[in-house]
Length: 219
Image (cartoon, rainbow, N blue to C red):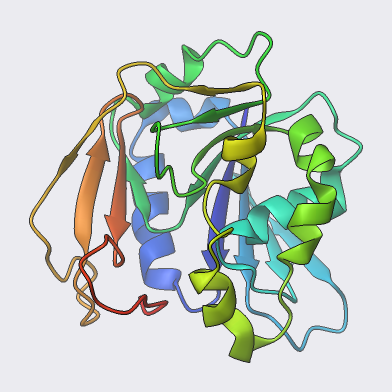
């Protein structure tokens, strides 16, 4: 399984925190990482790619919120029909047991796996096959206009669409999480609640957690 990180060119602080948590685990050497960074609207090409010893960075001329990375996998890797990805946001961090739990996931007869029964925030496992099957939906979410970002963020179809509609979707065992008190986690002025998903040892640092305030895209 490859690991795909969905990011944006204004989220370098969050992305670096996630990368630091990854490289603090010895097991990261056993995986390939794809970091998809949206928001480069003025690029002359749809995608630019840069690699280092650990990560493949893909720069995109669109910002499709949670779907930037999945759209990129559709556009670039659609021929890799046997591939599986663990898909997460840059506003995540991994725990020391993440890779062990990832390795234990059984992919037999599975096309996607959500981390929670509800509100998985599009985080989880996707096969390239299921990404290809939802081509029409994913391309409908492709956004090349920065002024429309909040429209896509607010959309009722914005979260877990593939998980909710994939007949071969499963939920990771031991569904559940712990929520910690909100704090300015990244020291950027935005309050966030940290949620810890014990079934995969993953932390999500959430600015939008149903607190009754308008949704935000601010880091």
